Amino acid sequence: MDINERALGLGSKRSVIRELFEYGKKRKAEIGADKVFDFSLGNPSVNPPEKVQETLKSLLLTYDPMALHGYTSAQGDLSTRTAVANALNKLCDFEISPNLIYMTCGAAASLTVSLKAIINKGDECVVFAPFFTEYRVFIENAEGEVVVSNPDEKTFQIDFDDLTSKITEKTKAVIINSPNNPSGVVYTVETIKKLSDILRSKSEQIGHTIFLISDEPYRELVYNGQKVPFVMNYYDNSIVCYSYSKSLSLPGERIGYIAVSPKSNEVSKLYNAVCGAGRSLGFVCAPSLFQKLIADCADLTVDITAYKENRDILYENLTAYGYKCVKPDGAFYLLVNCFGLDAIEFSEKAKQHEILVVPCDDFGIKGYVRIAYCVSKDTIVNSLHAFRALAKEFI
Image (cartoon, helix red, strand yellow):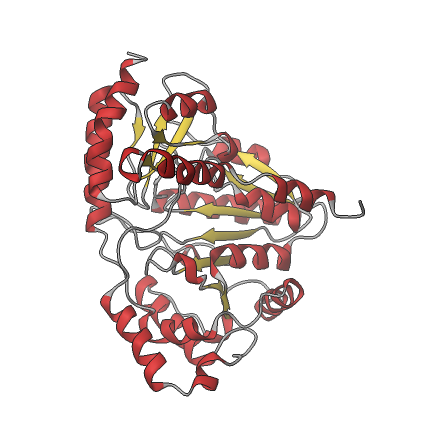
């Protein structure tokens, strides 16, 4: 059959996260949803801010339908891009123009478009393990090559010696994700500063720009007063990819943006390349209704109290049972060591206790599983006996 073999491969096998999620749906139908402790999918469990619901109702009731549902400019409506730029500047103490904002269908589209804008065939893109599994798909789709840099496993910050060894003349971009999926680790200011210094030095050494792409869908989901350093304040040739999926609990609406640093080399060409990449991929005119929503709600964030409570209950109990966990400062994931076992084998053993946790091999790190604790508090509390029983198999 004359079809694209790579597309066939991607379509024939879901990601490890989606495979587990589908297994969970089947298992819940068999024995009841309350008996399955599903920590597979990073699907927010906190309601959107009340103003989001109110704004949607108002838009539907007061807007002319053709204006509400019609096309916007390819890069997004100016009023929306202005609201995004204003909210970003206020939050991050920066100054970016709405003319450097490109509205997208969520962070996946933001990353895909950004990579397409800067990657030429054979260029290398460095990702830091553990990394979101789809980075590999997005980079390879742009005809780039994935280079994995291993972390400092004591802190899960960047191992700079390892990074330096991975940068070559082919390196075109580096992707960071902080707060991180799957670890919940937040990169410190010191980490971002040192990363920026290395990228500047290496760009000069190899004779071309290395772009820093910051994937930030969890930027506002941080605990205990943590701050997420805004990369544009530290590195000029940077691109921020963002989604409102987590900050406003709108994962199914697919709305986000790309922000191009005004300090980038040849910034106009870079932004035009983003626009051109969006055009070539068909990612133009992000959903009009939700662009209009964002114009009124860009500076809002969900109440993360429930996520913090879930984190604390889970972390404190699992460590008491003997699990070794990376304590997350942000997002809603817990990275758990598998008692020296292969992660896939450990995940299968967890299934015997009706616990669904994601093996992290595809995240670029072996011997760990990811727990998405963006679930109800009842699910967390009711799962503890199962986690205790699982731990007893190894201790």
